[in-house]
Image (cartoon, rainbow, N blue to C red):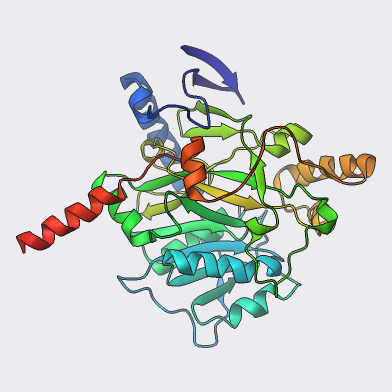
Length: 373
């Protein structure tokens, strides 16, 4: 089944046989026609010219007393933005350290809850600030590109927000260096992963998480929507929408991201963090998810702060709508018949949210290479 539709003024091809989460072993890449691929290549050419014209240098300042430290060849660096996320910082750092991240590179957007001070106390974290706020830095994309320029290209980076936790097949045991080797063996330079909003079934007011809490966030906000997503193609990237914010508030938010990316001189985030250039690299199997944590007991405070701060898209219109709904209902309840309790990466694989990663083939290839030496 192949049909055409318009979304946001862009012609798209909707593949009706590719539901998400996937219920079969087909891959998106094999479904794209030669015409689709040529249109994508032209889109990259057109957007790259536009991006180069409007690229500007922005000021960022490292807050480490001894200045920023260059990366080594062996480092696996993670770049992230944060604003008042102290409650998540211990678990965020612990999660990614376990995956093998050796360096954290952060732009703190004027946090006032102790986030900046906490991060400055961590030996493996470089903290930066900018006179530009999140909105003025093109929703943080210019910060990220400035950091990539500063620390150097032609290498892999994790590129996430402070409320996003990457999960892929057997990520409880398989570290990022092995995942990167699999991607390189397949000739891929990115990992595609949608944000999956997590929420508690219990009343949100009782779902407390603090910086001294030794639990991981998915032990509190432990459910997600098991269905109700839509996967489509644009000329620029895969697109996935759905989840509890669409179901509850009619917010059609783009969920797809590319949190693991090989950054080189051809790359840019200027168009969108959901559609990085070159576009040809964006059509991949969905091999990971970003568990996305927005909803804890402080959700009302967070929504009110987002509205007053006005840093989000369209003057935080989405958060204004949420605040209106909150005033009507008194408290959000995200539970519904297709809510699923999170149990780990194997569950996401079984449900079709992520594709299998051939770690065994990579390990066999490494053994063969060792024998040949």
